[in-house]
Length: 240
Image (cartoon, rainbow, N blue to C red; front, side, top):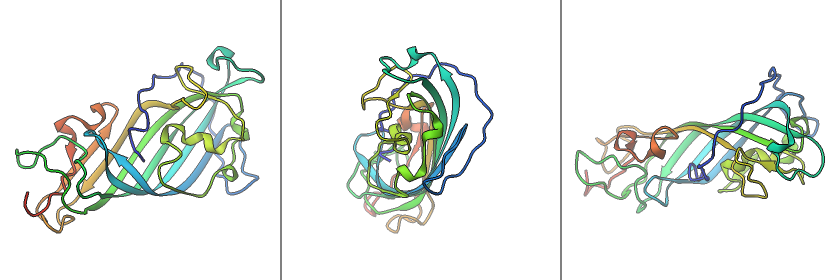
């Protein structure tokens, strides 16, 4: 989704008291909640960045966002707040869909091909992807003001960034702060933990049908840059 260079270097948010969850799944302008919020969107033509730089695939998936109100917290968590209370919100986004490799791009990981050099992507391969990212952030609007009617049912392309994904459901003029106090459009609402898995099964590469791959892009795995995180090689016939 420009998956994980969606600006990932965020700190862990300050601790809060989690209120009981009472999710309401929104379906129109009347979709508001008191302590929880859920929204589902279709996403297509989303660039996916790899550990080697650049975008290695286009993604198509369903994004499911869950947000939970954690109550009013000291205004120091919303530096410079002008009016109203400071609300803490946590949640997750979960993606389920597929990726399609982009020929000529650098492979996403550093895992090699049979112990040899790592080729650039040489074939179009499509496979399943799934993953989740956690959120923890602050805002001057209560979660009850969020509505699915504030955002499109389908998203095409790279905006909004996943780091700011929840913002599209709040009213225009809502201010947001991340765990480091950053605001003004530069905030990153993700709280750090994330993991996305991509799988290229045997036979998915028509040029190299005996090559399979699996790449895990995660917060604990150095953003998918370790050889143990695997790779999606998608080699051409000259490399397999």
